[in-house]
Structure formats: structure tokens, C-alpha cells
Amino acid sequence: MALLEVAANSIASAFAAQAGGAGRVELCASLDEGGVTPSHGTIALAREGLDIPLYVLVRPRSGNFLYENAEIEAMLDDIAHCADLGCDGVVVGALTAEGEVDAEACQLFVQAAGAMGVTFHRAFDLVSDRVAALETVIELGFERVLTSGGMPSAVAGASSIARLVAQAGGRIVVMPGAGIEPDNVAALRNMTRAREFHASAKRRLPSGMRRTPSDDLGMGGGEIRTDEDTVRALVAALS
Image (cartoon, rainbow, N blue to C red; front, side, top):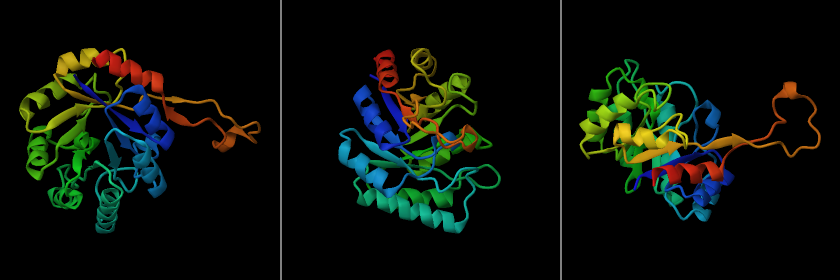
């Protein structure tokens, strides 16, 4: 049976993912910016309340994946922090200015993770050569790579993902992500032969605020949260 990982942007989203039947949570913050590292309290409470594996995105900022030394040091500290809190894994990645996997930085990330699992995130979709990058990620010891096949959605990149799955040959998990919905995930599984899938299953909740001063401020709307029913539908489509 295929596994569904849910990108959860809050504690409530993480719990909704578990209630909907997800097999793993990737916890992050600022999902609308591609995700960054969540707070200590968010990680700690999610770890305390989840029975399924918890992976944490370690990304110090939005934007590109070319990191300065200080940012790499911060990421190493965050990885150690996740280990101390009992997380099952981390989700990381770094690139060189030429669009190759930053093997030096990523080796440090894998070493810092120790017994935790390590996923290479969608920085993979920005590399100049995905075939070569996959071999590098495998050699570095990553257990999984998240990818849309270099396209805006995993459905659009399905043929590329299928080739990566074949290239991996069981040496690493190739996990499609981006734009995955209940009505396309089964077909994507058939096209790619992937065994793990990544989705946010999110929706915007209506605001509970009785007073919103001005929509122009952009701070009074309802939150974006993982939807339990959508998770359940994704899991059913994969079963």
C-alpha cells in the first residue's frame, strides 16, 4: 500500500493529517512561501501528540537554496534540536550557485541527523541535472527525495518522476509532490510507480474574528489548515 505524507503548517494541521490517515507528517511553517522551519513549541507539541512519524522541514528562509555559512550553522543547530525532541526525521537540501547539490553542506546535514531519517526536499527540482543529482543524493545517504519532476506539479512532471523511480531502483525513495489531489493521485501512482506521495491537503478556514479592521492589512483572514477529509480521500484513493 502506498504511503501519504502530509505537509502540515501547524499543530492543528499535523493532528488533522493523522486523523485523516496520513502515514507521516512533514511539519513546517509558512507553507505559502514553500515552507520554513517551524518553532520549537510547534515541533515539541506535534511530537508529543502524534503517533505517526514526524519529519521537520529545516529551511532557514524562503527563496533559493544557496546558503551562507551562518545559515548552514543554523540548520545544523535546528537538526540537532529536532533530534533532541525525538523527531523521526528532517527534510533538508542545499544547492550550489551552479545548480548542483551542495554535497559538502548536505553531508553535514546527514551527519548531524544521526539516527534520524533524512529527506532531500524540492530543491531537487531546481538542479541542472536531475539524473546526476539523484546519484549524489543517494551517495550522501538520503533515504528519500521529494520532487515534482522539475515541473510546477507532479502530474505535469510524471514522466520525469517515472524515470527517476526507475533510476533509483530501490536505492532511495522518490516521492512525488506538488499539486497532488484525491482525483489525480491514483493515476499518478500508476504513471510513476512511486510508493510514497506528498500533499498538503490544505484549505482556508473562515475567520473566527468578529472584527476585522481592514482587509487591506492582510492579517484578518482565516488560517490555511490541512483538511482531514481531503487527507482521508487521498488515502482512500491510494488504497
